[in-house]
Image (cartoon, rainbow, N blue to C red; front, side, top):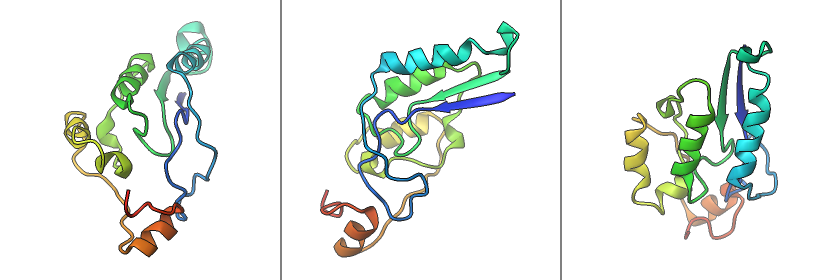
Length: 139
């Protein structure tokens, strides 16, 4: 049996109307808590005669890589997982980070990402409306 544990450690800057994940509060979860949760799940791994053959750990499930330490969080998830994570399997990238971090797209490429899915809404009015955040267009 496989299990994927995803923690929304930092949330999402937007409240997009099309988002099926909902609009929970943003929070900040310390890295130590992420590691603690992973260790709790690992207690039930197959090597302990329990449930899971494979465990994977991710630090986000809404906006990927929203935290400034996204590279460290990815590496930590990779190290905690019982199988190698392949970032290239995800087509979702942080549009928020793509617009603000010149190192983000090159880093994604080093992780095997060759294409990404982004949402563009056009005008300022439409962008602010569909992202659910006034000023999103200008940010």
